Image 1: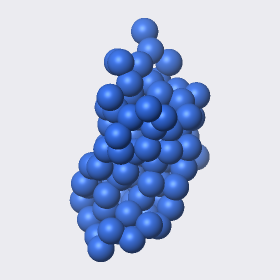
Image 2: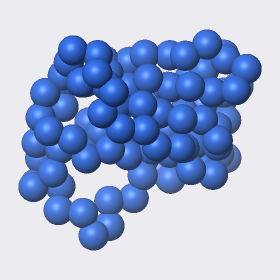
Image 3: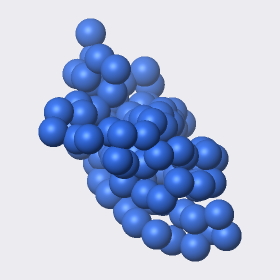
Length: 99
């Protein structure tokens, strides 16, 4: 069994109704990947934020509602972009597999 939390990153102490959450897990070879970087780009492609993945490959952003791109950068792999339309009051999940 992988080390990722079932259902994604824990939302304890987060008032989901008041937030726009973009989160997910980065995988390589069917296992969570620690040490990757995940960037959040706005609808025009401008850099907004970057976080490293946790020991269990997880990441989270708090953003405004709208269209975003999640760009994953991992050692030895090409970057992977995923588009997400994030809405307030929802957990917008973007899981990424890198080669």
